[in-house]
Image (cartoon, rainbow, N blue to C red; front, side, top):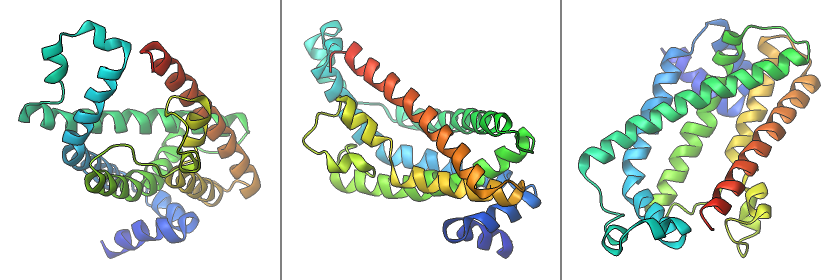
Length: 230
């Protein structure tokens, strides 16, 4: 068990060798469980604040026209069962994100004529996600709790505080999140060592994946915000 703890910690300091060792052991189930539990707990802690911020967004959008004044006023209230359900949905969302994210990483590396099965990439993806989902998630949750708002920035968007959150420039800058970039760098190193891929090639392919993922996120976010009138 000490070896596993050491490798989990090493993912943050020497990610390439650590991920390669975890891959060699085919170790992923316990990491996945940790990711889901951490996500669920962080969702539970921040749910009241998220509820208030989401209600405020709806009140400021075109969607407000579909609700009565009383409904809008009560929108940030919730039942305890809703808070518990938020844990389930957050864990489910992370599960889907891991499966889908791994698929596209696997697809990009296959297009790059690299070795490895989907399962190999899933093991590396899950373990590398400790950086973004656990370390990044804990910091974001702590800042949200302290600030009392979900408007927490750990990306380059911090350089554009005067821009509206719905602006295209802000959305693009928000994709360059410190923890997500750290995760992707670790993943590239892990794939290079575990699957015997050239490091430069691995970094390049992961960069293409990042560009693809970020483009989809920006387009979807921009259109969604415009659709609700923000």
